[in-house]
Length: 140
Image (tube, rainbow, N blue to C red):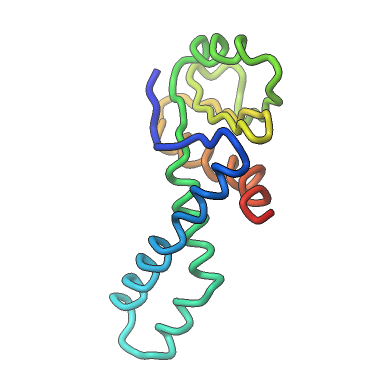
C-alpha cells in the first residue's frame, strides 16, 4: 500500500485552513500562466478573475489530498477498522485494486476500483472527494 498526496484534514477547521493557505499559490500560478499564455491585457484580465483563481485553488487543494493506493484486501482491512464511515464507492467490486481517501470531517471514505492505471484512479478519486465533500465544506 502507498500514500499519494499530502493531506487528509481531520477537522472542518483544518480543511478550511489548508484551503485558505492555497489562495496565494493559486493566484500566483494563475497569473503566471495567463502572462505566459497571452500578449494582450484584455485576455490577461479574462484569465485572472476571482472565479479563475478559485478554480485554481480548488484544483490545488484536490491535487494535494492524501490517497491510499492498494489491493482490495488492503482497502477492506483498512475499512474494517473504521465501520462508522459512510462509504462512497465508484467502480466494480471484482476489480483487484483500490484507491481511497478518508474525509474525516464528514465521517466518510471515497473509494474507486481500478485495474492498472493508478494515476487515473487517484485523479478521479480526488475530483470526486472534492466535488462531493470538500467543495461545500471549505465554502461554509
